[in-house]
Structures are given as C-alpha cells and as structure tokens.
Image (cartoon, rainbow over all chains, first blue to last red; front, side, top):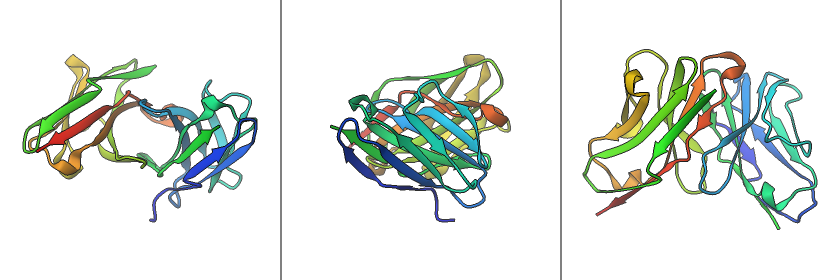
Amino acid sequence: DTGVSQDPRHKITKRGQNVTFRCDPISEHNRLYWYRQTLGQGPEFLTYFQNEAQLEKSRLLSDRFSAERPKGSFSTLEIQRTEQGDSAMYLCASSKGTQYFGPGTRLLVL
Amino acid sequence: AQSVTQLGSHVSVSEGALVLLRCNYSSSVPPYLFWYVQYPNQGLQLLLKYTSAATLVKGINGFEAEFKKSETSFHLTKPSAHMSDAAEYFCAVSARGGTASKLTFGTGTRLQVTL
C-alpha cells in the first residue's frame, strides 16, 4: 500500500491552455473522488467514480472539465481553456469505505 | 443535504494546553463524520471518523471527538497540545453509503501552538 499519488504536484499554465492531472489510487480501491480546494477554503467535491463508471458530477464541474477512469484504476482530470479562477489545489481520494487523499496538484493559471 | 460549520477560523493554544476545535453539522440523514488534518502543501490525513458505533471516537496523535446528536456537534479535542499539532483541521460529513458518500467539508480551523 503506497498511498494515493498525484502527478504533477505543481502546474503553472497560461490562461487558455489545457492541463491534465493524473491520480493513482490505492490498489483495489474501487471508489475514486476528485475535489478542488481554493485558498482558505475546505475541499469541494467535483466528481466520483465507482470502478470505471462516473456516478456523480458536481455543478462545479463545468463543460471545460472532464474526468476519466478508463480501466477502473488511475484517473485523469482535464481542464480545457483554463481560466484564472481555475487556480486551486486539486485533490484526489480513493476509498473502499474511508477516503484517503493524495498530496494534491497545485494549479496556477497566469 | 449535508453541511458542516467550523466555529473559529483560527485557534491559538499554548504547548501543553487543551485543544478544542468546534464542528457542528447539519444532515437530513444519519451522518458519518470525519476530522482531517492538512499540513502546508500536503493532502489531507484522516484523524478519526464516526460511523454510528461509539459516540466517543479516538483517533491518531492523541485526538478524540465526541458525537452529540442533541447538539449536532462533533468537536475535536486533545488534552495537551504539541508544537507538531500546528496545522489546518477540517471537519467533514457524508451521508451513509452509495453515491452519497462524497464528503462535504467545513472551511477549516488553523491551529497555532505557541511556546
């Protein structure tokens, strides 16, 4: 059990560019979650997978955001046409019951 | 729908003093309740969780929390603060099971520990 890993840890991009983040969950965890955390706030739910099926999406997840978990293992979160308001920490968690979080990807959109 | 309110965005205690971080929840169904800790530039680490067994829950690093349904509270305590406890603490709630298992977090309480 090596824990949840996320890549990259930091990303700086220019407004309008596309970015993709990866999350590798704890092996055999069938549930995977994405959250977004802005400065001074608690994490906010974005989306949830059970195996490869995306079962719930928050209204925070605009059309520019897409998440996949193609084989029920790792997941990717893509943001298209980034905006300055997308600057945040993006957290991934995996679960068979209790959610365990990765270290996060900090995104800065200039 | 679930929500949590953390009273006090900043709490400062002396090393060795009691730590009390407050959390009140709102839930239309029986909740699961959690406390997570976040150190700078890191993800969240689970301290403890309430899942309807004992109302007094013991966690890691000497922390504990008591579920009080009548007060809709789940306050976090530690008898004696240590410098290493300085961090951001988040209370979270989820409904039980299935697709409703997403976590709803409070806005966090930053704990400062002074000498």
